[in-house]
Length: 235
Image 1 (cartoon, rainbow, N blue to C red):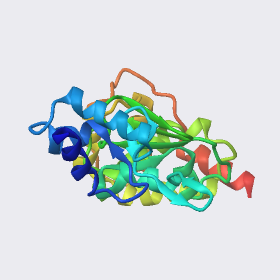
Image 2 (image 1 turned 180 degrees about the horizontal axis):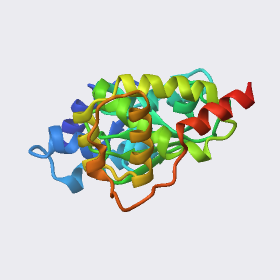
Image 3 (image 1 turned 180 degrees about the vertical axis):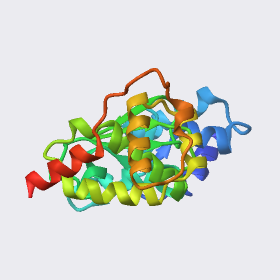
């Protein structure tokens, strides 16, 4: 009974539909108060009684009720749980849409987050990938740039003019320390780094990306003159 009370008191800090990542809550607040086995059994009992709802493995929320029944967490609420307080960012087609690079959409929303234990978690149509970074503005901007460049050839119906505008913004905001931290944490293709170097050199932004590349290799990636030509033809 004492264990149940400990868990209930901890859960009172959460709002309805706010995601509760069980392992995180246990490690941060409850590991000295209740055994892990008793903790998860308590969560299971609370789900069975309707006090708690399991939305994915290891992830719960307090139910939000309406006259029509339980209202599940929205996409925004789920994404916020993994991106607030510089813990993550949205990538994939949601990012490409936000940057006006394409009007195509995907049924799946991809999120990178440090607020996740385990490599990936799927919650409805949202896929969360673990990336142990502190997503400051500088880190987030560089992650966005690397993700766009890495996936450039697979972005459907890409707007070349919008992409060229984005490359200018990317070059002007290039942060070498953020870049170093990201590539030491997450693997990006050498061709992606070479693509970044192509853009930085075009806008005459000093960089040391040669350190990550081999002078003996020729990396396949779009050239700026090709992109300008593609933009001209598509107008």
